[in-house]
Length: 290
Ligand SMILES: [Zn+2]
Ligand SMILES: [Zn+2]
Image 1: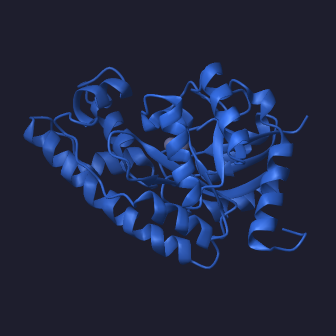
Image 2: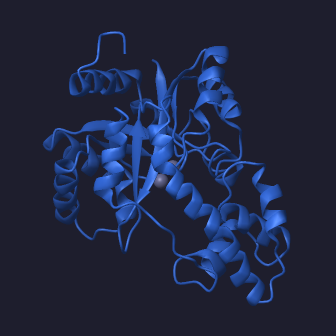
């Protein structure tokens, strides 16, 4: 059985392994295909694609875009995005700049609380990729202010906590549109993080998003309960949405997740990739070879 993982992160965003290392780990985990879906960037894709050739893993170019959704977290995956022409990169540059501007503001808040963390230290921890709150959390841990990463978010960095700084996000329609402009497949990631109270509220939202271009649901995910998985599968079938799934691998930044061994890994098989490819060919009128 050919197994897959359509949701992973590298040092191009907040993962701890380089894009090539993630691909190597996918190979070691026995995966036939994986998507690299870094937050708000396609910078890791060339390296990942090259590593895919080297290690014999099919690498699907992806991205995970954070969209505005007050009261919850809305992440939209773009699978099979065209990243060579620079257009998607250009659209995402706004988010990149917003993220860059945000870190010094978080550090300033921590400094004002009497915590002497520096941006230089956080940059070094990040290993040269996109710098974000997980790296600041590691700096807090290193300096002994918290025991673990979760405590850093609970005490300082999370929403409504003293060092929280809000960030710019695209409205959902724009996030969906930019993925479609790149001939990608927009998939709603980990639907439970939307924080919707009921299945009917989720269904209504998904119907609305489908009207704006959504094409798939992330049914299988490391943190989905069997009940959530069943609900999302039913919803995908009812609304004629593509089925996707992945671990949300972040390397050492989420050590409990490893490649190739997530819950429901046996359901993440290559036929999902075939179905996604077929959808994409139909939707964008592409040739058989794509
Ligand atoms: Zn996410
Ligand atoms: Zn993710």
